[in-house]
Amino acid sequence: MTVTVEALRTSLASPVASRPFSATARVRASQALAVDALTVAVRDAAGAIVDFPGAIATTLTTTAKTFGTESRACPAGTYTYWVAYLAGGVWTNLTPVKSFTVAADPVTFEQTFDGAQGGGPNTGLSRPVWFNDPCWRQACTGSIAEYRMDHARLDGQGHLVLTADKAVTPGAMCGDVACRYAAARLTMLDWEGDDGLPSWSQAGGHLEVRMQAPVGKGLWPAFWAVGGNAATVEWPLSGEIDVVETRGQEPALVEQHVHGGDPYRQWGDSTPLPAGQSIAGWHTYAVDWDASATGSIKWSVDGVVTRTLTAAAAGTMWGQSFRHAHTLILNLAVGGAGDWVGDPDAGTVFPAKLVVDHVRVYQKPLA
Image (cartoon, rainbow, N blue to C red; front, side, top):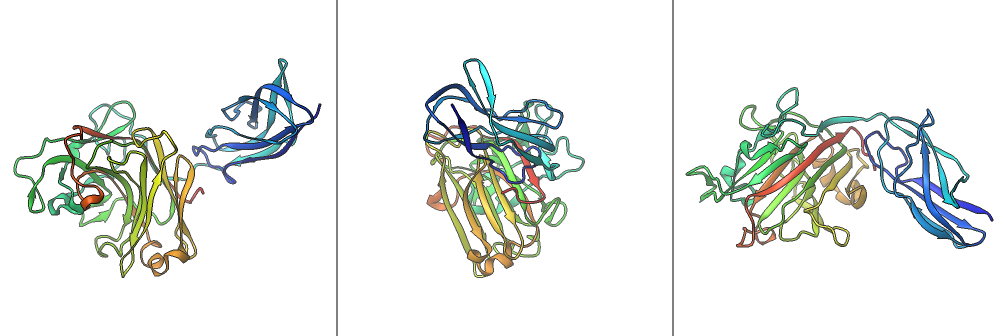
């Protein structure tokens, strides 16, 4: 009986700490062999077991079987890994034995929203980073929600919750119509205290959010990056990268777009979630942005790349809008964008909540 590993690799060529990744192997046997567990074993430099999760029971045959593990994150260091199987109560380790090195975590901004229930979005930070966006007064994007900082609060369980409800300040106007809802739009552009200058910005890198989005017509949460030069360069030339938008009436879809350039261009489309999944579940949405002259923007959902825009495909818009530093916005809008989102209907339940587990930015793209 011979068991052969034809291929073995990790999903990231250059793993970094705190970034989950997985492994894939292709295995065959010289004759049918039922195994109680097939796994990719991992040991750190001290020999401690840190195997990839997701071992399976299967039957190996003369036809090679491709086996994929579940994801895990590893601290910085060097690791060895190989395929192993359990049969008849005995573990057998196979060759080849390979190695990977996990680089130190190049995080440039991170919030995990730890803190007491009721704390604001700047809880735990050394200085305020998030500010209220006053654009609701001009009905930005057509939203009919008044944006208030008191509608973004920690839940005491490691999450930031942005809430949309009907507790509108009496007399609040969304442009030329009365606001019908209150919600939260957090921006790193301090429009009210510092003339729109960013509290944090960066050109390129890996931008991600892990969140649960609300379902219901008219609910429009988003995590996005906009030009840090927005105080002096008007949108869309300042640039906009929509890491993720969701529309409550389309719970199986996420939106991935960019806007920029002069003349204005937009690029992107809807992306379906895997069958049976919904925006109401936990998902990690990310963008890997190489801001070089020949770079790209890659969108991903739960670590799977879903869409790529190259500098070449973007044309002149790339140099105009996506080579300079951007900053972040996290919001829950209600209504707006014409029929694309629309206003809530009788089936939309309030209060509605956008629950955010973390926001994290790395210095360089990870994909």
